[in-house]
Image (cartoon, rainbow, N blue to C red; front, top):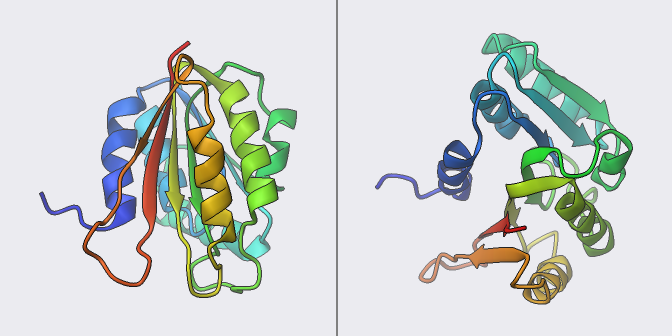
Length: 188
């Protein structure tokens, strides 16, 4: 197994989850890598909505999608992931991807925050169809601190185990607060 980066690890689960024709969301667009992956997995009959509050994220993502000649099955939205429910009906989404932290190469002061991230995650649970999945990468330490990580992990531990399966893995022997990958599966 050569997938040591958190994004590659999470991509393995996303690839198993998303089928042609699915509707997916990239809740934290960043530089567009997850948007590109979701677009390719959904195919011509699927759709992807990608959200970010920073214009450079949309610019990078659009360029990446054009460079890779992605299918025109995506919509890039300059808005917060806390507003996803304004764009999508409940129980319609197969997969929602979050990368918490800051835009790679961007302003570190513009990082995700626990209050808005948890609100968006709560809304995501409503958007997921039965059998849907949230892929969540939690980056912490350094500029972004630990408050968001701790608050999100605490919230995740409180989810009803009859409705959701939460799988948290970790890089156990990596120094410097490595990212934490989490998968949330909606059971019913």
